[in-house]
Image 1: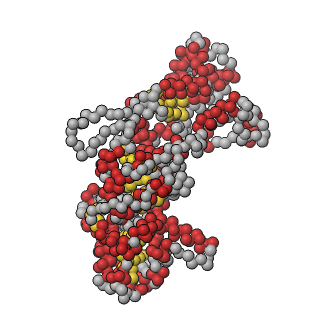
Image 2: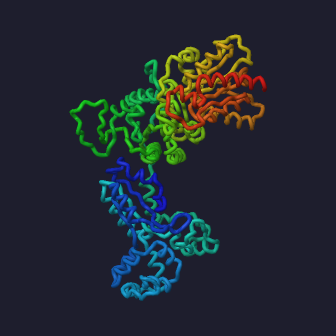
Length: 639
């Protein structure tokens, strides 16, 4: 890591997390070149940074000076020379690298300034060093000295009780014409300079990308290391067969249940699945209990590299929180960045260590944004993991705007390599979670999965009509595909004309309000279909794929699954979308077939109050949906 990157707060969130304690195989190398992108960094604070690592219980090592400088320090006057370099400001040191040898000598020996006399001890230490070698000596820092680095690595290996940080002092652009130049980050070698460098490195023309000669010491060493690090398929544990991940657990659920509670009921059952349960690793940033992981944690235990003493062994407890090496839950501090960094690395365990894991994390949904940088990086690297953002939206009405997420649904739609679902019913959570595990088994085409959940209890019987109409397997297929018709409007108003049909498209926690609004509209002779969009991301992906297909096949009329959700005769029926999230996240539905659309959602910061009050405040109440239905029909008439 670069020293300037230690300015980033997320670094220190990771450094101080207790989950790193006892991990002696962790080595962090800080490339201390004391330059940022724009400037030579004033006051590099190396001593302060080292103390911060020490306070976090890290072993702190440094490779500051190379062997040539260390030999110079051992000569008469060398102590004064070292003191001069140790006390020199970073700006002065970087400026010396741009001067000729005679000028460097003059400035080094005038340690108190050019207007003062020479420091005779420093002059003595440098007496045997010719001017033309002085810049090279000054540049001999530990980060460029192989022996100094090897010694530091040996010290790191010898301490297996704690993680290690190595401060390796370097020069940005070392041995290049612009070494130490303040603006060298954006500089490139000229063609002439590149040719000169190639000559110095003895690389023949046309062989710039060759590896070291296989018979050379360098070539043999590189080959040896490559063989040690490379894991063949034979060395990896076989991937879990998809067939070992069931499509359903056939669990029973109470009539009133939230999707967050459903997650808490499904996870412990996964621990019992042969071959799969032992490879699930959960993680949470100090929210395991409040996101309903208690039963899971009680069943599989908390992980620690060292068995921790149990000081409450005789006390009756609802949750036995006893860290040990056999635990499968990793509890983090309150850092969402750490959570997504951990999920990303666990999600690449097969590629990195040959052992497949199934990482599952929980996080308060609004704080997905806190860890977004690490989340994006994990997805970018191809990691396979699962996380639940819960609770979400203004449905978490008592807690106020800071804990009420609005933009996370949009992130779920827009992030590459991520499947995003917003279920309403317990069986949906079960089926989605099992499918997410199957996605993790596909190391080539599989995607990570985001479940946006809620603490709002829903009547599970609302799903019964759709279950009876479609059957379990077809309903499950449609849920995973992106959505299904929960309520058929014409079942309530069989004689409605096409001009009296409206779609109410909703997700997750807003299903009860959509159903009630549809009932009210049906009493006025309006056939209101309730479409439960379980995955806006899947639906948007289908929409864009269909459009791209038609670009290259204009005559194609193939609609596939979209025609299941929006029957052809109702393509142009007006749409009301409602979600406990930003209104724009479902607004694209109107462009599927060019239908008039009224998008309802949360487009302002939340408040603290009852759910009904908050829904009215945000414009997503039953009354708002009904009014939007009438307006949508008017827009349809105008069209």
